[in-house]
Image (cartoon, rainbow, N blue to C red; front, side, top):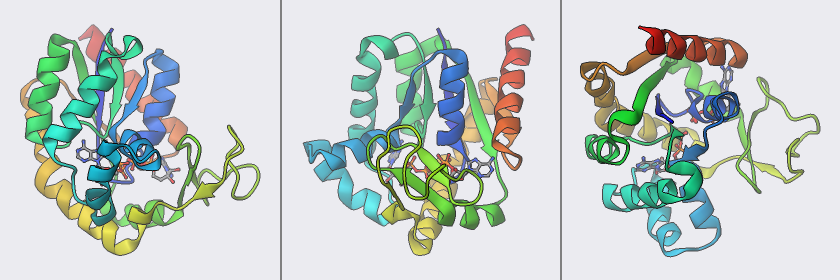
Length: 216
Ligand code: ADP
Ligand code: ADP
C-alpha cells in the first residue's frame, strides 16, 4: 500500500483533505501536528520538548520529529502506507521519509491556496479538544456552536493560529518547506491541486490526479 504526503502552507487544507483521503483510500491519517498536540496534552517528554517550538510557530527539530513519525509508522496500521499530513517539512525529513517508505511514496500532493485566503482560514479554524477534528466558523461550521459533531468535545482556537504566529509560520514554510515542491517534482511524484475551491471539490481533484498518476 502506498504513502501519500500532503504539502501546502499552514491553512491550505492538508488536515481536512487528509481525513477525507484516509476514508476514501482506507489508509491511516498520520499528522505530525496532531501527534505533537497529543503529546503536549499528555505532558510526554516529546510534548514538553515540542511546546516551545509550537508556541512560537517554529519547526520542532528534525531528530525529534523523524523519530516520532518512525514510531508511528512502525505501528501495524501504518507500516504499509499512510496519508502523511504535515510531514515532511524539511529536506532532512524528506530524506528520512525516502528511507522509511522507499519506492512506496506514490505522490506528494501540493495543495495550493493563495496567501490572501489564509488569514481567513486560520482565523476561523476551530479544533476539537478530544481528537483534533477540524472545523471552520464559516466554511465548515459544527451542527451545534462550539461542540464537535463527532465526539461532542469542546472546540477551541489553536494558540498558534493568532495572526503574529501565523505570519511567522508562513515565513518558516517559505524557507524550509516550499523547496520540497521542487524536490518531489524532480522525483516525478509531485501532484499539484487547486486548494481554493470547496472542500469536496479539492478531494475530487486529488483523487482524480492520483488515478491519472496510477495509469500514466
Ligand atoms: P498546519 O496544519 O496549520 O500547518 P500543523 O498542525 O501541521 O499546522 O503543525 C503545527 C506545528 O507543529 C508547526 O508549527 C510545528 O511547530 C509543528 N510541526 C508539525 N509538523 C512538523 C514537522 N514535520 N516538522 C517540524 N515541526 C512540525
Ligand atoms: P492545514 O492542515 O493545511 O493547516 P486545515 O485542514 O486545518 O489546514 O484547514 C484550515 C482551515 O480552513 C480549517 O478551519 C478548515 O475547516 C478550513 N478549510 C479547509 N479546506 C477548506 C476549503 N477548501 N475551503 C474553505 N475552508 C477550508
